[in-house]
Amino acid sequence: MNTRDGKATEGGLNVTLTIRLLMHGKEVGSIIGKKGETVKKMREESGARINISEGSCPERIVTITGPTDAIFKAFSMIALKFEEDINASMTNSTVTSKPPVTLRLVVPASQCGSLIGKGGSKIKEIRESTGAQVQVAGDMLPNSTERAVTISGTPDAIIQCVKQICVVMLESPPKGATIPYRPKPASAPIIFAGGQAFTIPGQYAIPHPDLTKLHQLAMQHPPFTPLGQTTPGFPGLDATTPTSSHELTIPNDLIGCIIGRQGSKINEIRQMSGAQIKIANATEGSAERQVTITGSPANISLAQYLINARDSPHSETRIDPFIFSCTNTTWHASGSQKITI
Image 1 (cartoon, rainbow, N blue to C red):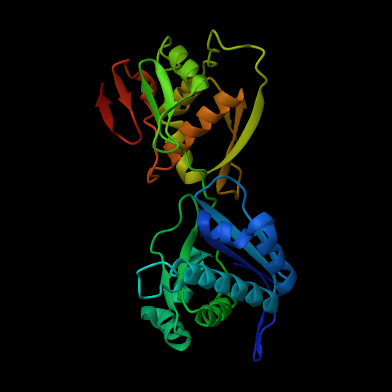
Image 2: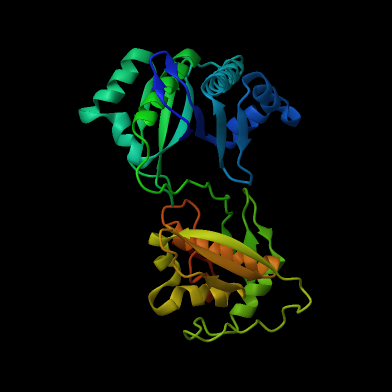
């Protein structure tokens, strides 16, 4: 949560705020509405800027920016829309108890101590005075220095709770640099069987010719590339395939997992994907490193997938880094699962 020209006054808040919300796909769809009509109405009626992160991710970041009144109006409209969705879902349901409206804020971890208070005193005070349930996640969101703060209750209780949280955040600005949480695209598991590659976006395996070709070519080469040696191009790849570049930012504390001892892991990824991967030198004062991937779309996609697997140890979907060494009678799915066919 960022503020500009912010101060708390006796009459309330007099600030321009930026608040980030974490939403699942269904919630985002509800906010956007048919042809974007709902979010357009929210922007016009609240006066707040409402931006939704792009990408095919199971989670999206909704950023709300504007003067205090506009922010709270936007929150009110979002909470009321969610309550409307809950009421609609209960129309033909046998459930008798109505679930509360729930929103998740994304807050710098350095501010969460002030929000909780000594011995939990502040968060208890907010719960009691607003009637909302407030939970601060114990762990930071992946690859970030932010935590999720979950607020549940009636729309009115949520608005009052958000106002009090804003006051706390203003009185205790974040300390140090904040690494924002960026949801990652959902990656379908990959199976290699009978010399072919398949992706599993749902319940069915779909042949993936580009990955099949890379898999077959990778099997013809030794699994490691000596440190300092340029990764050879795979024979058989069409030299006319257009190349492009894609950039990633990786937190410094995870870069070692990707590079590996004496560069072993990054060389594996180069060998497996056929892409060129360059990691920029550390920059003083920066908590991240720039990674540039160059190659065909298929090369880049596979390299990015392998990198994500290495820097997301808690991800639900992982690819075995040694997946290319499997035989034609064995396939490896996500995680450590191994099935012989």
